[in-house]
Image (tube, rainbow, N blue to C red):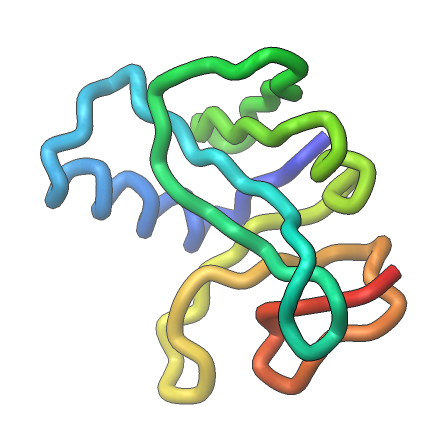
Length: 108
């Protein structure tokens, strides 16, 4: 399961409204090689299903990931911080054994 915090939901809804995205758009998250800790998060809006997609809905938000990324993201919460130190989306990943200082990459 992937989870979405209340603050992330509010920001996702705001972006979808601002960008005039149709109702069928969802959040796609994935994990790629890279970053100072070895693995990086990617997040975007999408409206096309892919083979082997893992589909979840939490807090009224549809969130989709590929099977390989889900192995790293299981039980992760997507959150949003509007503070001065690190404004933006971030992932609270219980599977990460180490994260970089900026929080954009991790290792397991």
